[in-house]
Image (cartoon, chains in turn yellow, blue):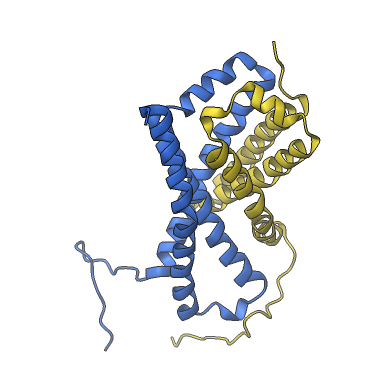
Length: 130
Length: 136
């Protein structure tokens, strides 16, 4: 049988909105936001300040400013959701059974929810100096 | 006739070349960063849930193997960001430029930009490692 190919003009394909198409857009738009957010965080904390100057007092000092708490909250929300959805996409490439994929999707959603809530609680609650 | 290359077990080899390599590198750097991020959310949240444990976590990050890992992590974050920007920009704004030639060239540019950004960061972090852990 001869292979049938159809010429579709690039960039003009209409795709029906679905969870997957939203996830596709989410990865790209969150990426553009994460570049300044994540790079800024890494440049300051890992390169300029360094782990040897980070301790409880440093975190308390940083989170004394509302701006940094909002920054960290945005980083947590965007980076972790971007990462867990990326992990879902990678796993989907290796899992043949639709049932297992669906099951794993719920496991990843739960993982995302639990860790995001733990992180968010810490940012809202702040440093508890005992 | 076009040549078909076989690998040692006689299977045809997938010749994705630059595009395939940047795909693999994008996945590895992404998964590596996610693994660290998950741990990092937990260790940072100890400042609220178990403040006495936070110093322990920081001590672990100050060890030589972890500081070397941190240098690798920074490469992962930079490469994944540059390559992610490439994917997002082409997909969202210039989909007609997804041709093999453009992709091949942009894959090299991506690696080059990532290395240029990473080398000064790695130098600075390597310097901290020598100063704090080896008394330089």
